Image 1: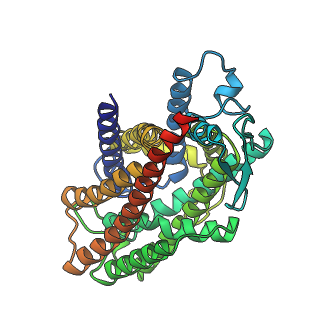
Image 2: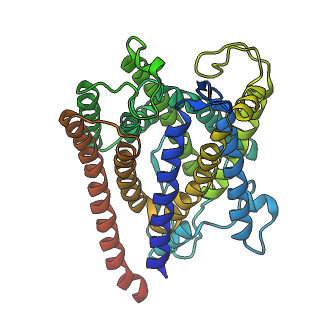
Length: 409
């Protein structure tokens, strides 16, 4: 059963996000008008975000309701009130508490406080803050995500999708930086080696070859923009910095509050939907990247008008929203049942296949130097995965040695 679940998770992550990547790249290039005379680019990134976050919110809600415990209230099901320990915490604490060992709890700075617990004393596990503090953290993540998405979409107007995928593979760098700056966390020395390899690889990739938009769907306007690579990389760096802030805040939520991944998925996407919906109906003036429309319309009206005049966008837009929503569910399912190590391995290979698929589908041309840079990046991420595998194996060996001691008590 476990092997079947893993196979389903791998197939789900691969299929959903490979289709999502194709749809995302298609949305970044011009669409032909209904009369066939002109072609225009879709300039409503907030509307795209609303479509995906709304479907993600609904799918997460359906998931957690179907998986809810019969004794849990609706607010407990949504993670607004504390329930019993998560299965992972229960198993971990029971093993240590029965043996009279110390149990560590992470504080807000990522450090561990050690609480000595005897076999007759139940460990104190509830480290939640108030519900309002938790919701504010969710809102903070939503603001970061809402701000990051338009920059990632705008970057595709200036750099190729393979370069975009490779850059997104470097998320470890901003995540580490934001964890250090925002929450004063420290990392193992090997992580800095990984950061160095990833940074070197992306530098090599960008240094060899012209990454301006190419392929059968490319736009002639973006290809002739001066310093296109520099603009695209700048947008991508802003996107990665905001992604790093998002991930570090999510780590903080998991450390301070007992919530499930699907509960976090529901609330963050709910706030994202509210934020992007409000921004979409406001009569905003021209804002670079965030609101690129210059016709004075609200983003919602601009998106509806574009869809009416360019109906060919409906299929990739629906594919983008639906596969993104379902893909998130497979990611959280993998994380819940198989841990972060398995998830890292799956997402690493998925990004590699995404880049290769983009090269094949949209006829991107990569130079040997760019392939070398990509290899260095994925080698760096592989180092991260191998070290994590060794750490997990060492912990399992220790747990196996502790089992006879626990049985003898």
